[in-house]
Length: 288
Image (tube, rainbow, N blue to C red; front, side, top):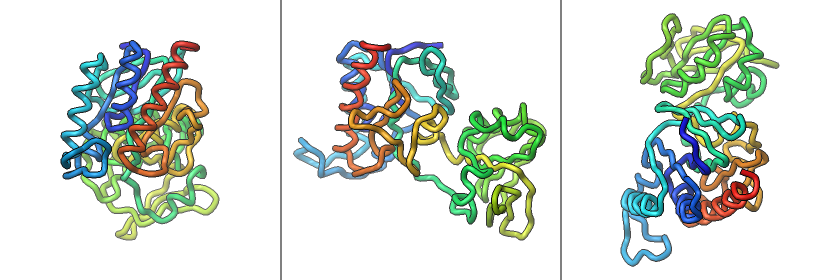
């Protein structure tokens, strides 16, 4: 397992900004990005400090990656599914596992959500966002995973050893991964998650239904909030709760950028990334 002083999940402005500072502080820094992020989709940026002419989001990201590498940061492409703590943070990804003394979550804010009646109302009452956290409560029971990509399969792998039966629900989307042998994949659109005090099933748009005791949401990729929840960090809706130093309630875990809420601007993300970097440098040198 590769070991680092600092691991930054997210290669947008917050993550890359932090990498500049931690690398200059001579801390071994790894930046893990799944893709170019939302900023790379911006055709033209005109409101960022120091730009005499407009620049594309993709160009701005690439310029900063070159800068981070020149200072010693290591940048790789991978998709992180889970974070845990075992004498340091352990991050599980598609390509392998990584270990660090401190972690910064900077993957932006999730734009993927399911508009399904009853889903939000039954959160914590059969609707879960963390399989490894809650699998224990579904020993021998029926469960379903909502998602259509690799993240859904990863969450399913945490449930199969304990659940009585499991199924994948894609809510009308094409299934883009490979399901384990014997696990059904239902691609029908979901009308509602059913239950009063607890989940008892789902109803599809065609009127058919499926009994289930638990529904585990794993849409798209694991975002910053999803990862934060897995390691016990406090969240508020779709934002991670941080203090004035960008620290979460979990020692050594920090968050910056859009995933903390507030003004969703490049300048804000860059500033929060720098602030988080200073906090991580102090943490690693003092406690790491």
